[in-house]
Image 1 (cartoon, rainbow, N blue to C red):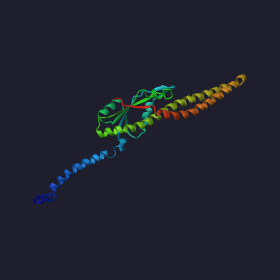
Image 2 (spheres, rainbow, N blue to C red):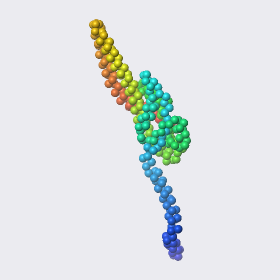
Image 3 (tube, rainbow, N blue to C red):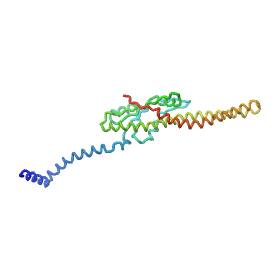
Image 4 (cartoon, helix red, strand yellow):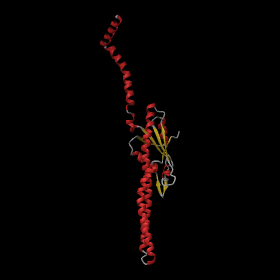
Length: 245
């Protein structure tokens, strides 16, 4: 009983003495501060993915297809620049490696040198897949590593959309040129036909040929739209995400 009285007396002394009370409150507040910071860090880490720095390295060499330069890697970069889902940083391979070592980037996306070349195989019997390399930065803390690992799936989805758009735009431009070539051929044939009015026996055959060519040209132009729609579906399965490790 005497011990309880002494304890109560000590508490009363502490409560009335600011010099003792303030340090005690400060010490008690430290665990609360740490707990609050921990909860804040885990509260909704995926809500700030647009602040997650991701390095994009474009090694694509580009090719010439049907007489026109194709730079699918550059087009993919342009499409990603319009995507605000992440903090994309378009850098060289050397800068990306240094940034990963310095823990500046959570991951690196590498566009291979044959990206454009593979893009032009979309209409081939056996189209080649474009392998985009995803390199997560495992040297970051556990939380960052977990966010980065989960964010890869979201990035894959957004990059796939950009790749599909790039494939479709590239092939549509090429098909548009082919269609224009048919139209120019039809126009040239028409001029030839105008000069064959005196060749009565051959004019019928030329006219029939022109009608057929015009018909095929129309079918070609109509088919461009259908092929573009199909290429968007096909291109979605032509991207392979790999970890180079």
